[in-house]
Length: 220
Image (spheres, rainbow, N blue to C red):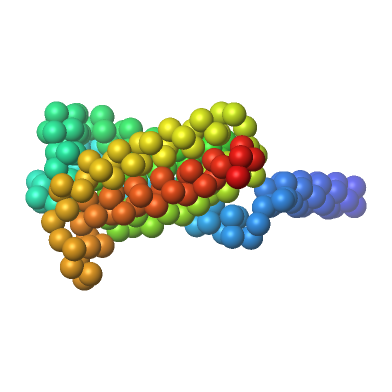
């Protein structure tokens, strides 16, 4: 009986701890924020798990194959980086990508160090997008960008205000840099053109960041 009672006590304590952790995780979060965090977070963890169990990923073979088959789809200004950094150091890049995906996934699913997780995730997606992987990178960028803007407006600080100014400047720079490389304006194909997505997304990101900055600093 004593053993049974002890087991029940530990079970209730464990259940209470789980409920407390869940309550802390969702406390004060709008439903759309929690849904987006978990969806993108588990997406990053799935991507990392896929690579962890793939031997070809660790040799750099997957990256080399992708580069060789998608070379013509890379953004023009991104190709020198691929040639000088990615291809020669494919195994190292493979390790960095998995580590970054794990950081982004754990951050978004747990809600801890969310700013770092969002920054890492968006950094990865920008590289994937420039390499021609428009889908799902563009949609991940949109979702993570929305979370980052929500975070900046929810907890405005001088640091977040500076970050918004920097991001708006970089976004506009990348948009302008990408315009000469646009290969199509056909409605059916623009979604597959990374230059179009950088140009269009960069303009939208600039406007959104400036608006969030104005609200966060109370200058509107």
